[in-house]
Length: 315
Image (spheres, helix red, strand yellow):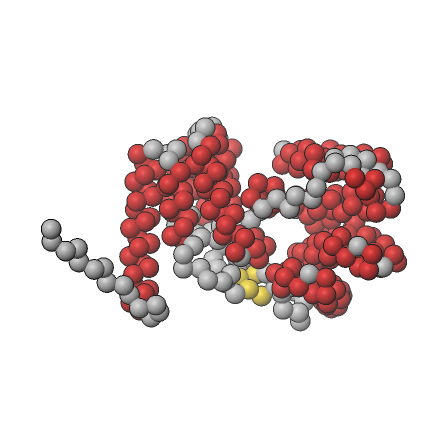
């Protein structure tokens, strides 16, 4: 039998490798499209597309205070996506998302809507494949979920951030009523987020308040308040979240929370940094800058990785 010719392997860097990756990218995109056209429920389409799209990403895009230089696609395409997502044609929504994600790698809303469309179509395995690839990407670069386009529009809107935290990268948080919580934290959180996703943030917050009233001890009540603030933050009500978080920060300082429960203190501080970045707006604010310095210093002591992900350049 004739010998099989060896495949030329490009050098590890430089133009030759770039050309090889670009060729692979083009072929994989075409293959994913063909698979999807033949069978929208085939998981391989969504695995292949996302694998190759993110192959060339070695770091999050540069940002200044969370805002990147990437052009905002939502001005032109946002209304179309909104109309399709509220319509009754999940196949059309899926095609829109999968077609546009090729040139808009960081618009994370597209991945959520594509997953929703696949679920509506009954393609559970394909949805799980899409979510698995997206989760793997965000595990590599968790900072990306908190970045924004050049206009200030977030890569991930409030609903997408909830999807990421609940479906892709759930923190766990434990269940049961240990520690005097008085209710199952995971269950209350899930019910509250379901209400918030439907636009009933007030009812969602009330679930945390009811649970707080059943809690025993200051630590348990503190945890319920922290979860309520996180819910408000993820739902886009940074103003409500920061009002509660600032109160909790005062309590934390008075009780030396960083000493007796550093993990809760790190969680609180990470939320403060995330919320303050949004609350500060585009203009430098001396008060927010000073607070962010304090919180960044604290978080770097408690959880260096989270501090690196959340703290941008300080003016």
